[in-house]
Image 1 (tube, helix red, strand yellow):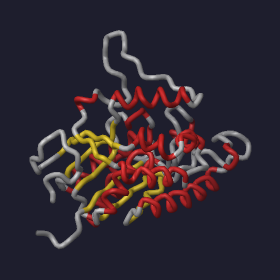
Image 2 (cartoon, one colour; image 1 turned 90 degrees about the horizontal axis):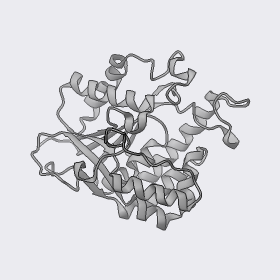
Image 3 (cartoon, helix red, strand yellow; image 1 turned 120 degrees about the vertical axis):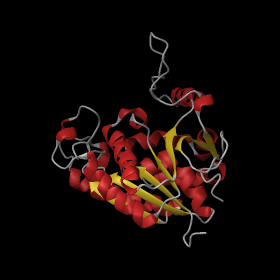
Image 4 (cartoon, one colour; image 1 turned 180 degrees about the vertical axis):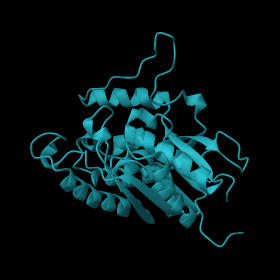
Length: 277
């Protein structure tokens, strides 16, 4: 037995990703006495400014936005009871194709080995038993999400550590349900469609390909409140408009694909720490 707590490390791209992507598991495992470590890779400076002002528009100050989002991130972590917050503080790269992708200091422009070396230091310090990040496409193609995936997998190689590794995902059944709810609330939602070749959509996976379904129903209120802490970001307002009951119905389960494992725990599983306790 090792003389340290079981540890979950979640590697996310921006402030607010921790709440939308893994708020439920962060809250659940913190409540179960597991040490939760959140690594946020960028400063979020390409997010919305006060009043919803967009990057590149008059009045958008990336440094001020980053400072505001750091305060929101800290508030979110307090809601989710995150044990340790670590900031890599690379510059937010913005959406794919934005000029900010290639700005000096942007996360997307940073060599993978540089980001991986910094993350590897944190892995050696915290010795995570479970690591969660995005898939190769960053879930939906955001450059910073893709880079977070790349440095996480590279850092694991650097350290030689063998934690259970998971990538966040969404079942296609949930993607469809989400689209129905968005349309109900009058929001635009273009549901991913199959390609002419019959390939599956890029967002999410068929339900049967998802290895891990974690029930976070009891912690949905915390997830909702963590998103509310990031209220400066317009994309979160839709979720807040649902109200907690509808939000819980939609997001009461968080889903993952297990990509590395040495425990031999059977899949499908309902616990990221299956085989570890």
